[in-house]
Amino acid sequence: MEENIIDSWIRIQSFKHDSSLHRTWESAMVLECTEEYILVASKKTRVIEADGRVWNTKEPAISIFFFHEWFNVIAMIRQEDICYYCNIASPSLIDKHIIKYIDYDLDLKLLPNGEILFLDEREYEYHKSKYHYSDALDQICRHAFQKVNSMMKKKIFPFEKEKIMEYVRIFEKKSQHEN
Image (tube, rainbow, N blue to C red; front, side, top):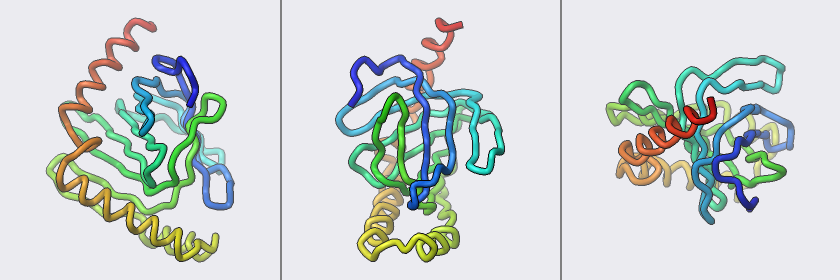
């Protein structure tokens, strides 16, 4: 883990199973870094897709990248509501001020009304075949999917609205001082 990373700006890169770059987020502010996860905040961040397409995120987001879990979570803030997007992904690591992980396509989305959507199952099956995921990797991804589904239903960290909104307020204060 990198030292003195709190309040610094960091990049995020997701890869596919074959190590090809999938997507890059240009900047996010590190708000917390523990032995378990790194938590970052961003707003209007430039995103670069592997095909060269560039776009900017619209709403503020709090993202949590776990070092020992097979998923990461993006809490997208829309006024006083939060929409959670969860990627089933390899445990994250920090390398030269960049958060890196492998995206395994299976995703879940928790809507503000509590509805949970299962996303990209076809894409997962396609990449499982294309990249020859092992049976062990498939089991890990499916177990992580079920674990996240359970966490969403129970609304335990990081699916706690009050805690996420607290991070949003911290980020707003810190980013105001930067301007």
